[in-house]
Length: 452
Image 1 (spheres, rainbow, N blue to C red):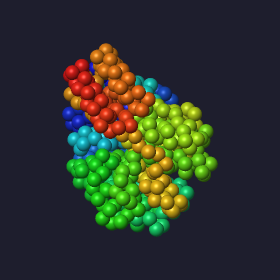
Image 2: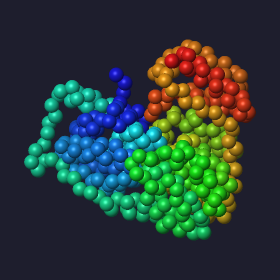
Image 3: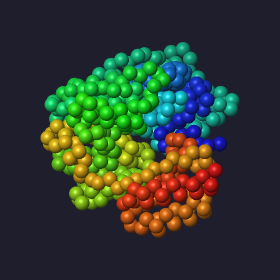
C-alpha cells in the first residue's frame, strides 16, 4: 500500500481515490495527531479551512469541516481562496491548523487535501506519516475518542479573509503599479477574484481572463499550464505584461509585452536582483531545484548570486530556506517563495512583485528577463508505468549514463517519478533543441519498456 501523502498533500480523483470518508477521516486524524503533539495544549483549537472552486470541493470541504468539528476543533470557513491565502490566514489568525482543498494545476476531476501547521507552514513529513498511520488504524475499526456537549467544535464563516489577504499582498509591495496595464489569467481557479483585486488596488489597469469559475472549468484552457490565451490577450490589449496562475494560485508564470513567456527561473532571476538591490537577499543566495534551467545557474553565477539547489518540490525549497534563513526560492514551474512575506509559494504576490519591479525600473519585462538565457529543455511525462521502480532499474541507469556522455558539459539529464501524478518525468537540457528532443525521446522509450 503506497503512502497517501505526496509532495503536496493527498491528491487523487475526487469521489474515487479521494472520498468524503477519507477527507473526514484524515481531518479527524490530523486533529488527534496535533493534539498529541501538544499543539492544542492550554486552549481551544482553531482551524482555517479553504478550497478552490472545483465542484468536488463543496462536499470535501463539508467532510473536512465535519471531521475537525467532531474532534473538538473550531473551524473558520474562508471559502474559495488561494492556497497561500489559507496559509497566510492560518498564521495571521493564530490558528492551530489550516486545511486547503485543491489539486492545484491538475484537471477538474482531481482534488486534494493539504494541511498547514501553526504559522501557516506545511506539515513536517513525520507529522504527515503519523496522520496517515492514525487514519489507517481508525479506518480499519479502531474507535475514536470523541468529545461531546460543549467539547465539540463550532463552525463559522470567516468572510473577512478575502480583504485581509488582499490588504496583506498590497501592503508588502515596495512601490505602486500606477501606469501599468496587466492581464491577469486566473485559470478559473482560486485567484479569480483575489488577483485582479490586488493588482487593481496596487494601481494597475487590469484586464482579466479565466476569472469565471463554475466548478467545472478550472485549469481548462487557461492558467499557467495553458498560456496561449494570455499571450493573445496581452497583444490584443497592448498590455505591459500578463500574469498566469494555476488552480490554487500558488504559482505564477508571466508573459511580456511581445507575448513571450517568462518562466519561473526568469522570474526568480529578476526578483533575486531586486531583493539584492533592496538589501533583503539574505546570504546573497537564491534557492532553486534540480529542474532549474542551466541558464539560470549561469546567470546567477555571473551576477555574483549563490544558487542552492534542492529536490523538486516547493516543500524542499522551503525547508532549505527555513533551515538557512534564505529569503527567496522557487521552481521553474512558477512556485516562488518570498519568505519575508509568505510561508509558501504565492502566485499573486509573485506577480505583484514582478510588476512592481517593472514599474520601479521603467524597464520592460522582456528587458529584465534577459538577465538569463534559457537553454533548451525538453520535458516528457511518461504515463502508465510503475514509477516506484525508477531508482532500481539497471536498464534506465545505463540509458541515462549513455545520454549524459552524449551531452557532455553542454547539457544534462533528469529522470524522476512525479510526486503528485502517476507519471515519470524525463527532462533533457542541451545547447541544441533538436539534440534535447532526440535524447529525451529515446529515454522516454526506455522508461516505457523498462517500467511498463
